[in-house]
Structure formats: structure tokens, C-alpha cells
Image (tube, rainbow, N blue to C red):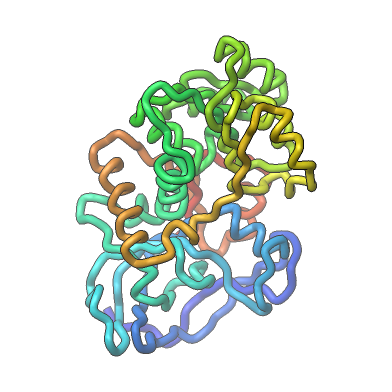
Length: 329
């Protein structure tokens, strides 16, 4: 298939709500040295996209948006050795601009997609799945017998993380916002599900753990769940903050960690855990292995045409989505 000269892509020139996102026509880029051009089959939607759109994570403007996608290599630049034209690849760490029909990225930011994993699955799982990988295997090493708390257990990362934690032998306590999401969480690894707007999360966690508290709390919600996460930890427990869906956590006195039982708090990001090509390949390989084994099932909750990007952002920001959300160029 011949390459067109013009493509559709999403751009924004000011921060704000979904209305700042515009679908425009721009030239199809050419790959430079060490770069590959991808014809994108599907693009993953993530909360980091919202943070960048709103300015919480500032980008130089005007800008594209999106880092997670999968597709076929259409062209390669000078010196490329990892891939060739026709290869199936996916990325979660490319420069922003994945909301487009074509995207140029460094070959070092892409991984090969196994033949028995669909490109839609790869686009739905790369960022969220590698996030789950480093959270349960490296930020905190979940092991047999651990009890863990997982906020947003029916979200994109939550559904993957819960299944992976179960594979490692953990008991998973998930929190969700509705009965429908509770049912989804239960079928994807959560042993116990708490509806956070109906129950006191920390009290329920202590009941479920016979007063011990959990070894680790995974919190991508932020401001509205921070207090319940801290209060749910056992002595020397770890709070892993990896998102701000409800807003950033306010400053707090570190002495609270001592008073709570010598607690730990960390704020990791995927990009520090896949900082080298070797780390990226290892994380992706571990992810594809658990998917291909059937131990982790990927839930694509909803798809939107690229032209409906504003609607997709509204759905994600209002927590109306479950599992992964895809844009189809």
C-alpha cells in the first residue's frame, strides 16, 4: 500500500478540556536516522494523555498527544537495525503524537509484537501492561500470600495488575465505583471488591485482613484515595502512587509515615523502569508472556474513531470507561 502524503492527526495549541483537541490534516512524516514510521492500527488512551492535555504534565505547545499505539512498520531511517518494513510493532514510550494515522518514533521506543497477539491487544496493553509489570514485579515485589489494595480495579491498569498479582499468589482487594465495575473486577482477579462511595475503604480493608492491613496499596486515583490508602497499610507497608485521576496529593508531613508504622511512599513512573532498550524488551516480553499464557486477559472496554477523540477523553475523565480504551485511526 502506497504511503499517502497527508494524514489525519490530533493537535492542540492550548491546555484545557477535551474541546481543545482538534482533528487536522498534516503531512505524513519521514523517518530520520534511527527512526521508524508506523502505520497505526490502534492507539491506546491513557490518563497521562489527560494530564498533558490539561497542563498538569506540561508539553510545549502546539503539540500532538498520545504515546501508546501498535501497527506496521512502513519505512525505516538510516541505521535502523531492530526492525524492517512490514514488522508488527507496538510502543508506549514514543514521543507524543500517537493520536494519528502515522507516527515516527525512535526504533529504541518500539518492541516487536508476537504473531499470536493482535495489534489491537498490543495497543490496549502496552503502557498499562508494562505499568502493571513494573508495579508488581519491581516497585514492590508481590509474592505468595501478600494482601494488596488496588484502587480503580476495573480500570485499564487495574484489570491487568489484579490478574498478574493473582498469578504471583496475592490476595487482591479492589475498589470500584459501581456494581457493574465490581462484577468486572471480580472476573479479572479481585478477590474482594469495595465500592468506595458506599464503604469506608480502610475499615473494610482492616476487616478483610483481620486487622493487619495490606502489604502494598496501588493508588492511581490520588487526592481522593490517599488517606484511605495510607490507613489501609500494615506496619512497614508501601503506598505506590502512580496516578492522579482525582487530582494531585497535597503536601504531607513525613512524620505521618513513622506514626503509621514506618510506612513507605513512592511515586514511580514507567519511563524510569524502561529507561534502556534491554529493560523495555524485558518488560514487554514478560507482558506478552502472561497474555499468551492466558493468565492475564486484556479487556478492551470501548473503542472510538480518531475523529471522536473529544468524546473518548470525556468518557475516560469521568470514569465511565472500563478496561482499555482505543482510538482507531
